[in-house]
Amino acid sequence: MIGEMMVTLNGWIKSFGVLTEGWRAGIIVFVLVLGTAATAYIASHVIAALERKFAKTQNLWDDTALHAARAPLVAFIWMQGVYWAAEVAHHYSSAEIFQANGVLMRIGFIIVLVWALIRLIKRGENILVSPVKMQKPMDYTTVNAISKLLRAVVIVTAVLIGMQSLGFSISGVMAFGGVGGIAVGFAAKDLLANFFGGFIIHLDRPFKVGDWVRSPDRNIEGTVEHIGWRLTTIRTFDKRPLYVPNAAFTTIAVENPSRMTNRRISETIGIRYADVSQMAEIVADIRTMLEQHDDIDSKQTLIVNFLAFSQSSLEIMIYAFTKTTQWVRYHEVKQDVLLKISDVIEGHGGQVAFPTQTIHFGDESWLAEHEKESVDAEPENEEGANKETADTKRAFRSRNSGRKHERSCRQDTRAGDVGEQSLEGEDGEGEGD
Image 1 (tube, helix red, strand yellow):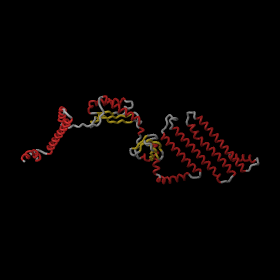
Image 2 (cartoon, rainbow, N blue to C red; image 1 turned 60 degrees about the horizontal axis):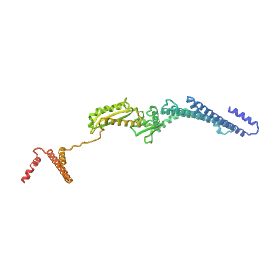
Image 3 (cartoon, rainbow, N blue to C red; image 1 turned 180 degrees about the vertical axis):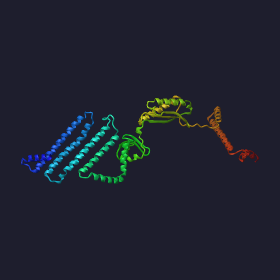
Image 4 (spheres, rainbow, N blue to C red; image 1 turned 90 degrees about the horizontal axis):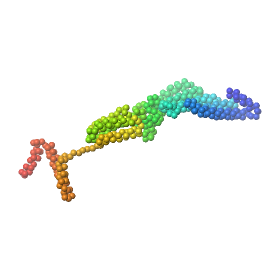
């Protein structure tokens, strides 16, 4: 077809008899390029008009297909025009470069087709995960994994077809790939481990983009930002990016707090021993308050019980679950619950206990009598009062010292011991001397 058109156009120009063969070839090439530009311009505007029209319909895939094919189609028109121009130049020239026109055209067509398919896959991915375009958008992680797999299949297939177009044997390439794959597998085992680790993540879906994850086995905690074929990007809570090889997720335990159904409130609150008579009523009112609380899930486990006699308090165990799973809202609910528990305890005349100690001194009655006598004596001046107080303290210390000495003697000696006899006969020996 192109040959017939070229012969007709060449004969028409030659009939004028004023142009050489080189000029005639140049005019034909110029006309072909000009016609290609006009055709590409018209095609681009036609597709754009169709896109605007189809955008008003409820079907999302027609305008998606047109948008994906618009740029590749324009590129194909230009590629076809250039091919025809090259064929004209090859007719007038014996340059070896023009002999590759056919091969380049086939390779170009494969590239344009792959470009269109990849654009279509990418546009379809954006539609399937968009909450604006879809009533029930699909999971981004799953759609992204399928999109990557489809694009890889398209590219590999295009490479094989391109190699076949260049004259290579696909069977030979596959055999070489099988032998070379073993060597590559040993050399890049870590890379392959990460690749299959990413595949397992997409298959099992222990987490997805946007989830809060952490591992008790490793120092990993944060929000998942991206799941690649080799690395998973996690943004820690101090806003640092953490890049984790996918192979690590096949050997460690991963916790996904984003999928929790409730958050737990677990507290132990103590009241004074003086409030033991009110314990049953306080426990009952706290349980009633939690059952009627709007933000506490009464369908989950709810425990309010007198737990134990502690050193300085009577402990009450509070165990409940909130309806919300949001971290900030959870702490607001927990604050409200603790304040209401405090109100319940105070409403029964009790108090929340704090660590205390009570110290009992020996002979408190004797000390109280001497203090009373010192008060009744009412010394006339401050000097006398200070002297009497000092005398009372010395007498109290002397009395306690004597009692301690007596206790030590009784504990260290038994009746009939030499030590006891010497103590009893000490005064007599002194008199005899």
